[in-house]
Length: 173
Image 1 (cartoon, rainbow, N blue to C red):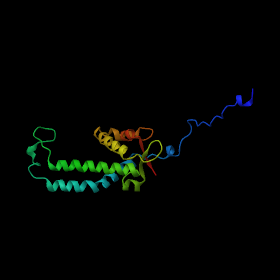
Image 2 (image 1 turned 30 degrees about the vertical axis):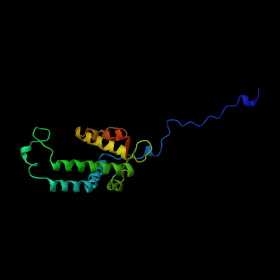
Image 3 (image 1 turned 90 degrees about the vertical axis):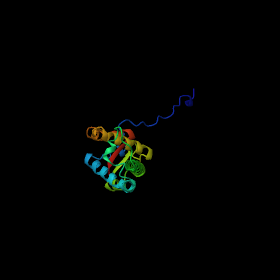
Image 4 (image 1 turned 180 degrees about the vertical axis):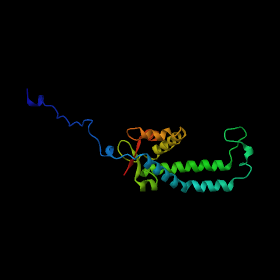
């Protein structure tokens, strides 16, 4: 028998579970910093929303805004032009914010503040598609007694429901 018959390839080094990347050690943004960043996002999206709302007010007529129409969801309510323009303003704001979050971590004011939305695994930007999912889940989190937003207070990674859906984290740099 020769030496080549007993030859075994060298075993590659193994990394145990104790390895953590520098990104995983990065400071997560707290509740009040995220709240301030959320306000910054809202201010930045007004750039798109205000023109839609102004057009909606200018094009609305008094017959669709009277009290005789009733309330939304009740019989007799009709969708007025102001409602349509408000919906368009909301959708355009969501898409603009999703683009900003997906491509640069947040709106210009959020980025200037240093509170960025990043991928939970590698710290890269999450992309527009995941940012849209995050925005839609944020809307749901808001409607469920703010529970989705408050979830970060007891989550070990300080993630809200919309962070969990988009597999993202919010860091303070």
